[in-house]
Amino acid sequence: MSTQNKLQAVLFDVDGTLADTEQDGHRIAFNAAFDQFGLDWHWDIDLYGKLLQVTGGKERIRHYIENYQPAALDKNDLSTWIADLHKTKTKYFESLMATGKIPLRPGVARLIHELRQQQIKLAIATTTTMENVTALLKSTLGEESIAWFDVIGAGDIVPQKKPAPDIYHWVLNQLEMTAQQCIAIEDSENGLKSALAANLSVLITVSGYTQRQDFSGAAAVISDLGEPSQPYTHITGLMKDQNWISASSLEQMLNR
Image (tube, rainbow, N blue to C red; front, side):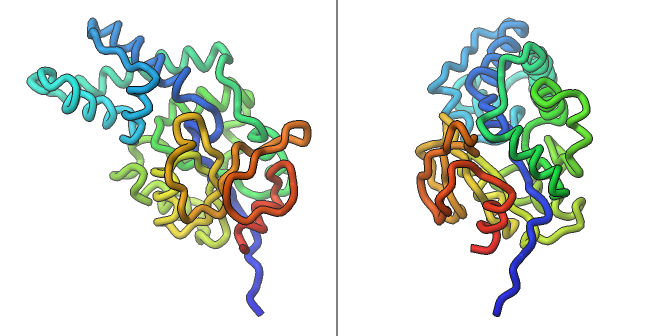
């Protein structure tokens, strides 16, 4: 008889998973940075959806230049210029977060509080910057919430971003845990590929930009984490009859 794995930690992605930060957060901040730099670039909702196939803000800017603004490739020290542009964008994003206009997705705060009560470790595995992570957590869960997470893996801490598994390997190493003790919560195909390549079980909560992506291999795909008063919509995967994700439902997925 096989032994059951006990859930020891939950690893959260950030953008699109904790909050719908992309369309009305990062995209707006990129456009504000372009204006400040005197650029006539504008990322509308549809274009930004295409650019999200590239993970990492600096990488996304470079991809955009190569494919849409090739004249900018002639800039002196392009990498430094991109880094400066991205830093400016991060400042705009942080100020957007500080206004509290971007709430957490349904069920996120509830599940985080439940996991803490049950002494299940919390971690973050994201390609976004540490500044963006802390700005979001502070504006939604309060200043003290940064300390709730045992490990925060963010930004350029690893050489390759998602869909490479580097960030998940790094977080698991910092937690001193195996993939079989943890579950990842993601919203995108790139995030799913990254977590699966690190041998993690993955729950997908789709976001506006990702709902049509391929989630083959996920333990389950649902609309969001759900609330007692606002049940999630089940999309695919084995799920018990319930309306919201709890610590026990995550443990069931771990042992499916």
